[in-house]
Image (cartoon, rainbow, N blue to C red; front, side, top):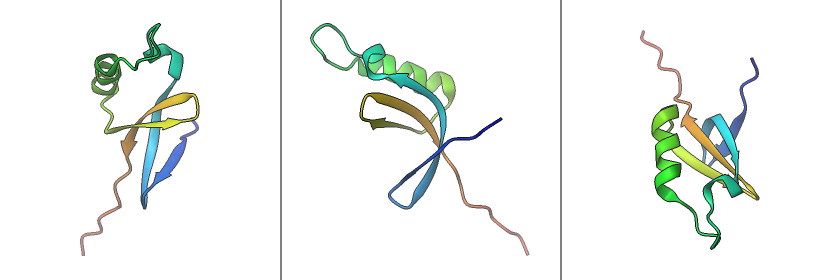
Length: 68
């Protein structure tokens, strides 16, 4: 299984799922934020990252903590 990663402001995010922008827009070209939120909650994501014509539901990749 391939993991896709997007860097944003010194943080790395794993892409959980990618959607075409048209999936979340209505006839007036407005984004249905409630539908976006439902998908983020369903996929247990942390952030939605928009690139060109895509929305990526992502989860923050936390740095490893070493106990010593």
